[in-house]
Amino acid sequence: MTALKRPTDVGLEMILAGPEGRRQAAATAASLRAGRLVRRMREAAGLSQSELAGRLSVSQERVSAIENGLSRQGPTIATLEGVAEACGFQLKIDFSPKGEAREENAIDRLLSAPEDQPVLATTE
View (cartoon, rainbow, N blue to C red):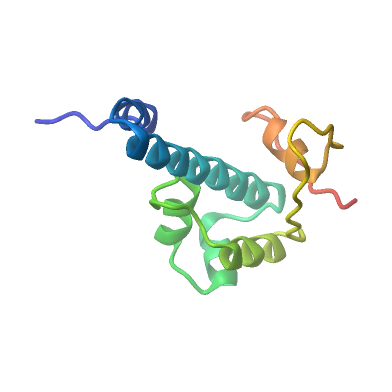
């Protein structure tokens, strides 16, 4: 029986595979970060995966796949907009020059909160 590989193991294998592997590893890492964000928003809103799925008109399994980063390229912007709205957030995409200091926002607070503590949804 073959053991399942952790996403970090798969990412390491991709990095070692050369430039294309590094691109795939970056996409996998982005998918995992987006999934963690979706889970934290859902938890902040006090929703179960099934409740969020109902609001998005998708299956609970699809929500689970998004939260676990099981999509090759991660959720689309349209999906993230739907999740944000369903959870009482607004999706904002911002670009700034590299190295420029930026202010902490609601997303940073969600992602930096300890996993074992509930996160309160806040609006700015």
